[in-house]
Length: 255
Image (cartoon, rainbow, N blue to C red; front, side, top):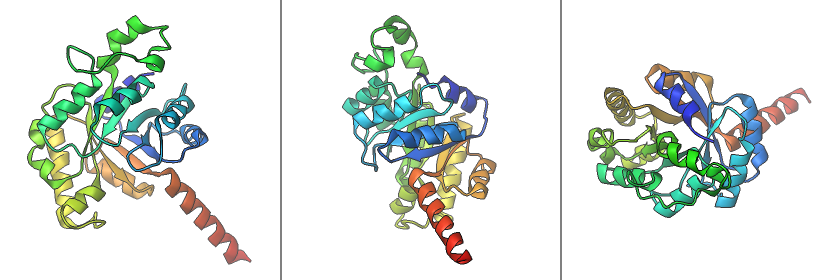
């Protein structure tokens, strides 16, 4: 399993649509894969998912076009190593604020001499069946996405974007709004202004930029028009709750 498919799409500037996986049942991931998403973010930062559950979600994506990315809880070498050894082709690392933290995050994901990741890829290397091939391609193929979600990070963004092996950045509008004392006001002019600055700087550095959005088509398309290349269009629980709400409301209107 590798992230070349998504990397190539981003390199070719194709719009990529994803969703968040937060439920523990891997059937959810299987259903989402069948919908035609380009990528899925398996969330271990805010969702109650352990490493065993992450592996089951990864198994559910096998043979599918949706590329799984695991958002880790923190910029931590041990957790990143375990997620990658489990076979995740890409990781998303929250709240990175400066070049030093960026370099540390990337070093955790790469084998020596480029990084400090310990060797024991297990499932990622086909349970010892393709270790030489894995060693040859691992550093090149891994997707490393950093979340930009604090206004202070923007002051350091140009330096962050210069770090080699950075695959992409991802804007977290909710935490960004919170860092400005405007939690939840993601459409506030100050928040919008910071987001535009992030997009502009990413374009200047030729680094793909993504963002978390709602599942509304107009919202997702709007972000693509503003220069974002990959968007999470809602969440698994959001799709379920809204689907239930809409269904029961429609039924009750007819009764």
